[in-house]
Length: 164
Image (tube, rainbow, N blue to C red; front, side, top):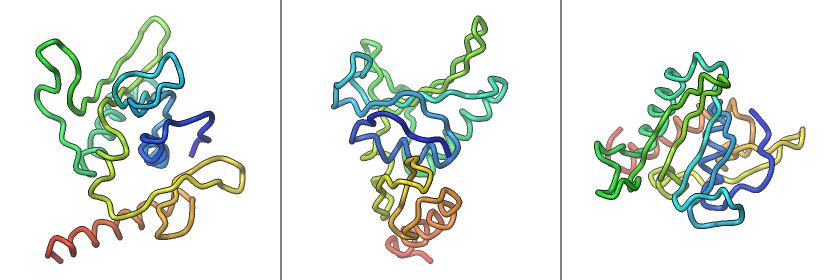
């Protein structure tokens, strides 16, 4: 997992950590409420760099599957009549001039992404000084524990819904 450097807005920290734990290289993010930097946008957003650029479509599909697994629905028309993005939105871009491939996720923050997840996520420091996601169930910041923790959360959701 990559190290998270710099400040991450409080309302998007868990989302960024979750994306990084799943191998997405986030490059910029904001929660839509905190405006510490001139580049902060008026809505929650996360920008992700994709390397190699040829993996752009596959990684965008991976991100869509991950986000929808957490209960986020992407509406057919997430735009207002004025053209503003009003709902969860995912875009993939490729710039042939410089070979950069990016994915942008809009209107998905910690509250939206993790509202159905019973785990309490916190940012924890790894032994090498980098920051990583800790779900509080395994008391570990190792990303290889996430699949186990995700299965535990799925079992708890099924049980609380009355299923097996």
